[in-house]
Figure 1 (cartoon, rainbow, N blue to C red):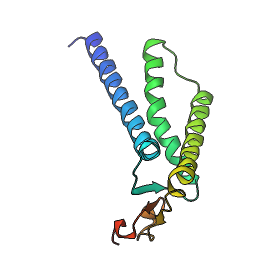
Figure 2 (figure 1 turned 90 degrees about the vertical axis):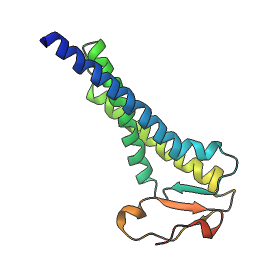
Figure 3 (figure 1 turned 90 degrees about the horizontal axis):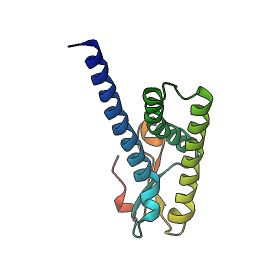
Length: 141
C-alpha cells in the first residue's frame, strides 16, 4: 500500500471516529440534561446537588464535541484550534452543564415535589443524586 493511500485511510478513520464522538457527546448531554426538561411526565431524574460535578460533566461532554471540530480544523484548514479557544469552549460547556442542572432543579424537581433517593454505597455512586416521584422507584443498595 502506498504511503498516500495509508495517510488517506488514517484521515478517513479519524474523521469517522470524530463524527462518532461528536454524536456520542451530543447524545449524552441531551439525555442527561435536555430530555428531562422536555418530557412532560418524568418519574426519575439524575442531578447534582453541588453543581461542581455538573461543570465537570459538561466540560467532559464538551470535549467530546470540541475534539472533532479540532480534528476537522486540522485536516481541512491545516491549523489546530488554539488552546485558549478550546479552554474557553470547555468552560462554556461546563457553565452550560451547571445551567442545565439548575434548570432541572427549578423546572422539574421542585415543581414535581420529587424526593431524593438515599445515598448509594461507594464514592462513585454519590456524585450524582437520583430524584424520583415515588420512593419505590429508588434502586436498592
